Amino acid sequence: MSNDRLDRLEIHVAEQQQMLDDLSEVLTRQTKEIEALKARLSASDNRIAELEAGLPAPGNEKPPHY
Image (tube, rainbow, N blue to C red; front, side):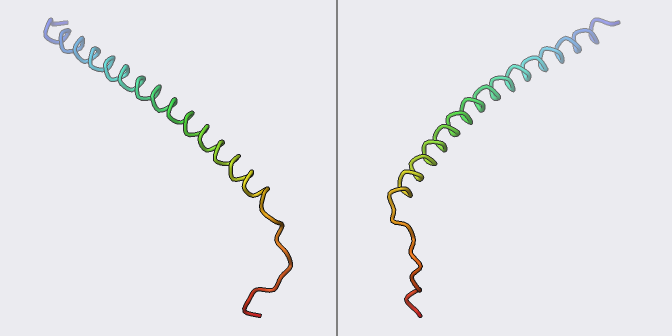
């Protein structure tokens, strides 16, 4: 195998390793962001449930147009 071909292969492997490292970093960051968004959504769901619990039960009243 020629030195030129070996050099190109080593460069290619190094570039792929850098890309894998970059993608791994992005995946880690997105996972943390998703977990934070899940926590916010859960808190919002809980708050909505609390607010709904404080509302009076709907009656069987006819709408105003009847």
